[in-house]
Length: 538
View (cartoon, rainbow, N blue to C red):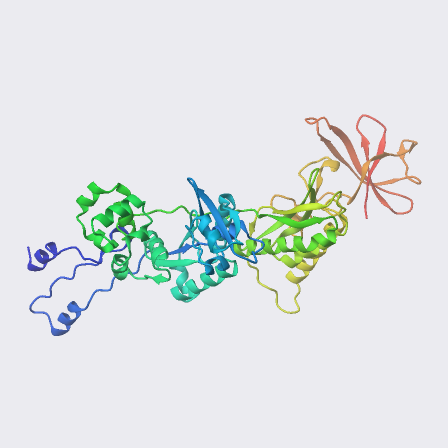
């Protein structure tokens, strides 16, 4: 065995090594005596630790109970949110006015009343908090593609791939703080290579950024035990041992810690230092939009309801932009005090995300809606969100896509004004019976897959205008007549079909010309002398 291999075998573990989350630094063998001076210089250079595979941003939201319980109207005075723990009623969150009076979370309600006699008190609403946390998780997809919920008031974002997009960690944290502040939330942030470390930093040292594995252990060592959020019994045991920080706890013998504490203590430590994998459940964005809005008063005029409908459309626009998607159908539900809600449907020929287009259709539709009773609440639901694909614009003067968009906009306006069933397109169906060879479809310029297009039209002559039901023709001398004698130009075309569904036909079709020059499509029932008019050529 060489000297270099013996030295490598006896080397102690690198203190910067953090387990399976980071790639360990490779051992640098000692340079042989014959190495050049430049080779020795290169061997003595400090090794650069690799970048972390993950970088986690923890968002701690202390005002979540306050925002969830009072989202629409801020109190003009001191406001607290309270919850019951045993026989005590404690403050969970408070607004800025209450905080200036000395009220803090965890304070008893009686003490809070002593500090602010005119205190406004509201009960904590866990379900509303869960909805608000989920809404913020949807918002966080504007910063990263991986978001994990940590109830009751925390979000975890994996942002390693987002740093370059937003211009670095500091810029990303500033943007998150500003956008959450605009929504009424205060936030404590922590950024670290592990999710557990980011959570502890956000709790005990907000704003701390640890972007390198080399400084992770040192930064965690300075955090107090209280940063972990462990149960009070565990923190009291640490205090009896004289352990005040994570670094002091980490230096104790592992076997002794395993015997004295429950297994989650060592597990949390290993997760924080990157020595144990800690998978997180990924939050999934909903595929359909649904938003409910309580109206400030009962409104029976659709013009008064229009601003609230447009506000919901703005929320829909945010939902679609986050997903780069569009929808083709919307439903507005107006809830009344009694009876079923009134439903207003909007549809477009193709899935779209532009809010202005939807607003125009909404105005057209509301002009024809009469509510049976005043509305108390309003709900907007969408169809399935469809990913939108980019399209190249045509060169100036060549039309093309712009003309198609104008035609689609016209179709959408006609359907909004005249009704969903008043405007439709036609498509061919593979069926020999003429009355069953077509169906009405949603109007669109493109031919959908599986439907007969222009290249698939039958070569045989077919009129575009079919009668709703065949009309019997008078017969004189064995020849059919229609405002005079008919001259048969071509035929017969025999159609025998439909025996399997009870609509069997056995016909011979002809193209006939009237004395005035009109061309008709007529047929004779096989086995009879009866003639019928079925269509007219243009």
